[in-house]
Length: 150
Image 1 (cartoon, helix red, strand yellow):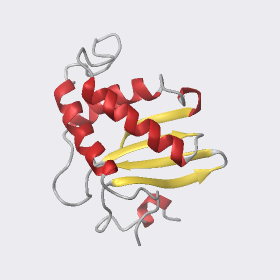
Image 2: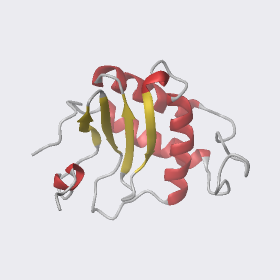
Image 3: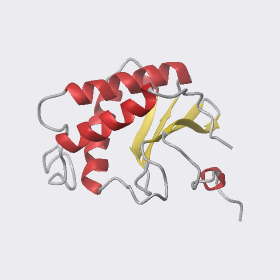
Image 4: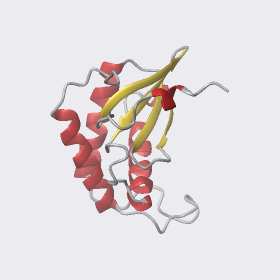
């Protein structure tokens, strides 16, 4: 059996950042890596779940909303995948804008009722804000060339 592309990346040296994981026709899978893999510092479920609700809602209401296909957490608890039909420069701009909006937001976590979510009790705006601030600091303080480091 062939290895999937994401298993071919050396996760022991992978750093936080934004990467192009794969391109399938006009759909680009972006790897939004908020944490270094295999370092023991993983997102807890409440953080992942909260960022997912906030980020997915805001990016699906952004200027690239028509081109967003999916946003969700990685099972390894070190980041998120964003699948969309949009160029990397625009994606970076929108990701930064969405992070800033989450950090500035004061209200209820989007989709926080039992009618909207299958585990609505595990949501925390504070945890989402902390993770988004952490990731925003990373993106603003590095060169984002979207390439995995060799």
